[in-house]
Amino acid sequence: MNCRKGDLARIVRSQAGNEGRMVSVVEAVTREQAQQMEPFVGWWRGPCGPLWLVQPLQPLRVHTTEGEFLSFTMEPCVIEDAWLRPIRGEGLDDETPAGEELPQAVGA
Image (cartoon, rainbow, N blue to C red; front, side):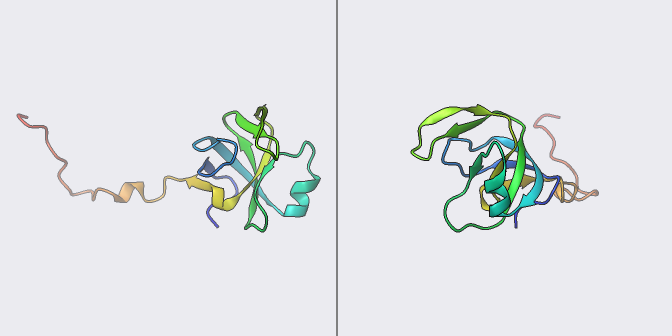
């Protein structure tokens, strides 16, 4: 699983053109739970992995099953875990060791 509850995530796959849009991961849901939500907005195809209820942080495009654009939404929606990449700060401090000398500008 890519995401965890509470993560900020970027959509990396979308059939509606939402790649790059940011969402907040609310909770894991089953396919049955997702299909009972009103209004229902969801993105997955056929058999899929874990699903997340997400809150968009930017308007998301909504389209028909035939691919026709309908509107934008800021309503919570369901997205497959494989279509999301979490944004976390883990490990960022380890990229440059504390004792490492930083590069200097030429002529400095």
